[in-house]
Image 1 (cartoon, rainbow, N blue to C red):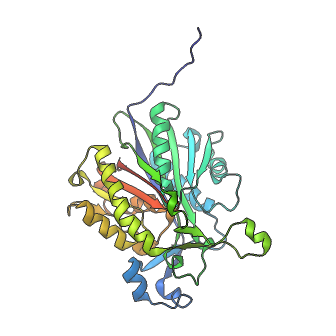
Image 2 (image 1 turned 180 degrees about the vertical axis):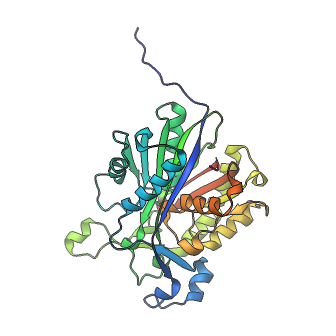
Image 3 (image 1 turned 90 degrees about the horizontal axis):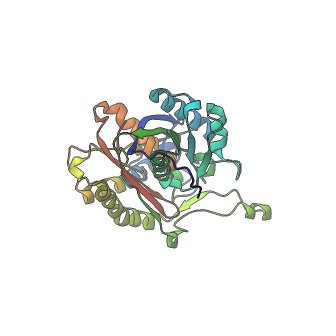
Length: 331
């Protein structure tokens, strides 16, 4: 009887490098408060955001993805031709199809690597890391590029008080490769569609044929806050358990940059010691959905290069409602 060939499995994978691209336009709170009848103080108290960055009118999300990816490739000492798969997490693709990943793969010279998009919003980067880890450990890929990228400024209603003032533009990219020991823990991920309308678009693309306006993002802020603080803190603890580590073993905590109050409450519930550096990139970058975790990782390593090689707990959560978390070794 003929048997099928199998791929050689590997002991583990790890993040080899990280790259970033931020919108070049700095937008302070004062520029946004008029249309939402608010104030700089109100935004700071509710979210911790002082400024957010947004891309210029001529910059597309894929441009940000390319910039971040090229930095990650350079830092990993690789060329595009050495990438075996490209995974892009985004809700900012300008077309339903083809995928942004396919275009990015062509720009980077990674063709014919398989390429696909993930639509998991703020959890999308963690989803991509989970899939890249599986691809590498199974032997299906040697190096995988994972990108979280958003140009959320294109789907904002400036008069919306629920979410418009939170959002920014940017991209973060990591290269994940084989390792002799696991550098990415088992992922804790899932979804809860019963809260599907909590973070949503105002209408569908199809409704535009009937004269409805361009769809924009909206959220039920209080429901999102409660769900994130109480339910996602549990998932963060599950991720620590899956990795077999305690909070004191961490060098850094890198949550999705949704809201400074959520980040601070996470730290309290996880009882993180003072030795753990907590990413608070949201203060000057804003909420960049799928891009927020790799952007925050990039920033934290720039400010604290001594954390390289340490353990970081990362967790993404958002529209869907979807979530994903892992403990990773920092590049």
